[in-house]
Image (cartoon, rainbow, N blue to C red; front, side):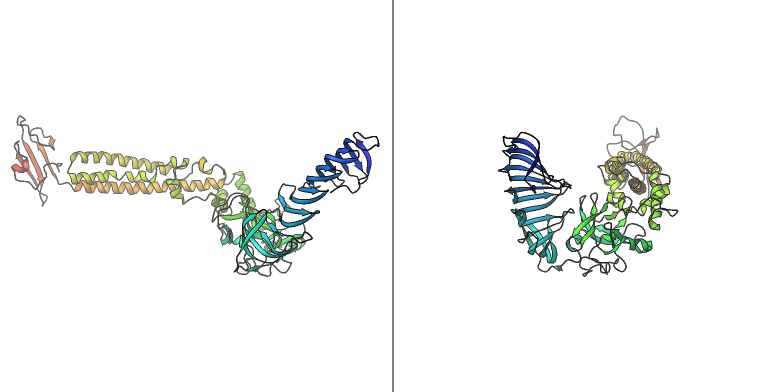
Length: 582
């Protein structure tokens, strides 16, 4: 990383001493086509300076007696960066290396420009290999581990130059000064490098991947006619690796020469290679070492395909989330067929994909509402799962933190309609005419309220309302469709509650009224009903009591006002003195 030829060919810019050597801040060129800008002292580099190498890379640091000492930064021609410690112009000490995107790809020690001690080698997919390297700086030994992207699931055992030979499942439990500590599961199956070929998908076809098995499972797809699908076993954040896509390795020309019916589980790995999971390995009883091929297509996916370097399978593809997903949500990806027409038959894609693409275009343009709902119900059900709503009736009625719920009377409002009936029953037991009258008024109000609920829910039963608080991030058709279903469920629930309340309120009120004895008193002069006897001696008039006997005959009896109650006067103590006239 230093110039191959330290002979100054020309001082391009800057002062020189009496001998013509650069002295001070100068720009000099070397015969190797390298260039250096920095401080010189009588021809030797001293102080801050930077090399510009002919291949486009650079080396920036502090020089002393013409050699780089201390911290230096080497920038590769592709933009990658190495931060290291230099002694006499060579890497000696701790260093870190980053790729052009700024991702860490190496962390460890150097000795005379060679890796030494415990080193961490990171892949772009965030998996890594860690262990103590040999004298040649290679990741070779019996105490090396591959650590999955989650940072704790690992395969610990023997590696040769970073390639898995034999390892068991382990957990990275701690790090101390860059040195990892692992807990190995002694009963774990043994894993080894098992890269597929054009004819062999894997040596151990049913040996599940320990990382993948923690995050996904295979179940019946929620997409109509799609068969099996891939589901999240746990909640996951965006940008999380969920599953791996391994398979036999074939060429693009072989895929292009086959019928589309044979390419249902193919995915392009690079310009030369296609990964395929053919029959009979598309069935989990025959192959379950990786499950990425079980993810179904959606035009609104929650995952994507990404390159992955697997310690067991080698270079493959993985399923990575593009947004947060919830437990039991189906994982979907966009299959990525070319949408550009290649002839009269349309895009270069299978027939089912072309049909769904036409539906999607109709959906996107908003020209076909029937197609819109069919698309949502079938091939984009994964997007509906992303909402992860509770059962529609319960969510729409009981959720109190959304606009939707605030525009709906809770289910409990319907139950309040039964209060008049309960009041009637109470009134009949207390034999209180005031409560009976209040019951009548309340029953009328209750029935009017029930009718209003019927009318409102009937009018809004067939459409949904916007709920910005609950669905703000997804202003798309799937949301509107689910929202419509929720509103319908809420309205239906209120209708049923109203009907039940109406019936029970009326029934209880009726039974309450019927439970009252049919007895009443009225003034024989004015004909006015009197429910409370007037014990005022100055008041003139005659009290007539009427009651109904057990055989339903009606009896009338005139009674004079006295200080005793009519029932005491007539010895009718078994009859209640206050009731309504039959």
